[in-house]
Image (cartoon, rainbow, N blue to C red):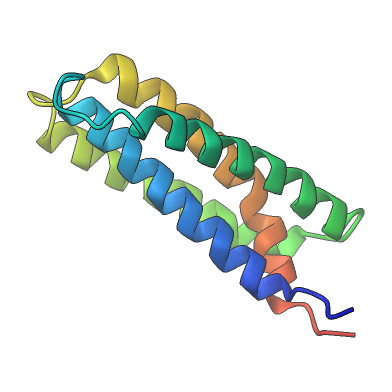
Length: 127
């Protein structure tokens, strides 16, 4: 049986994360009447896969030393929220903050928990 590569799973996770954030901003920018009916269930399904993949990342890395990867992810964690704040500021008149803030909160939390482990798995040498 052929093993799925770590890089492939990380790319899928990143793609799902981007789609999830795009759906979040779409839902907060437009009224519920103009949004397609499939958007909500699709976002819930994607969110479920993102959370399940967090368990996969934790299972794959186990007790690995992630000091170097954590330092790299701190750089991302210091830049990404600043970029998001600028985007929120630019769109503040159009956004529904009740939707966007809670959605961004859990997505960023999961991202920052997974990022050091994803960096570790990305650089891991195949056995």
